[in-house]
Every structure is written in C-alpha cells, then in structure tokens.
Length: 107
Image (cartoon, rainbow, N blue to C red; front, side):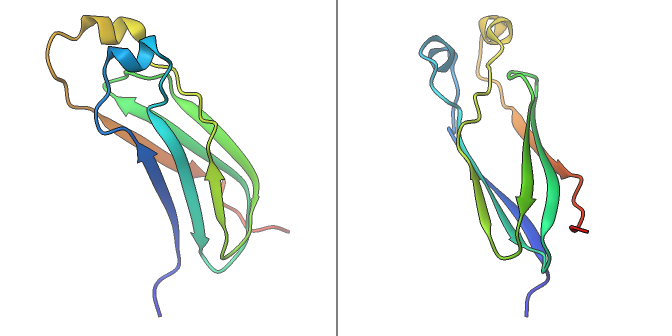
C-alpha cells in the first residue's frame, strides 16, 4: 500500500519566448490535482509563480476536492511580463513554483 498523497501535475510548454506573449499562447495548458490522501479536502488554493518573475503569479481556488478524485484546472490565463521578456538577450533558465494551502477536511 502506498503513502497518501496530493499530486499536482503541470502540462506546460518546455520553452517560452516573446511569441507566446505576442500571440497569447498559453504557457501552461493545464494543472491537474489528484487527491489520494484518504479524505476529502475543502477550500483548496493552488498558487503558481516563477523565478525569475516572467509571469504574473496566479491563485486558483477549489471549493471541494473529494478523496480519490482528479480535478483539472484548464483556464489558467497566466500573464507573461512583457518588460521582462523584452529585456532578455540570451536564453534564460527559469523554474515554476507551485504550492497548495488550506488543506483541511470537511466538518
């Protein structure tokens, strides 16, 4: 038997450039949350940011995430920072940061 977990899966572009900004191409197509904690969760917040800050951080709220279910976030609408992209003269490595909070069982 495996340990309980909450897994966050991110479907994103491997490389991002100014064309993503110019053509409004989504850099993250989907975030998927898989609840295998053995209990339901309510008031879940998912936060996404980057380092360096090439995108505006986002927060998505899920009212309830039942045990043994998968929830898909597809309309993420993350905004790229045009000033940051314009200042890049060479390839830059970045990483996305994701976190979840307010994980509490229902009453």
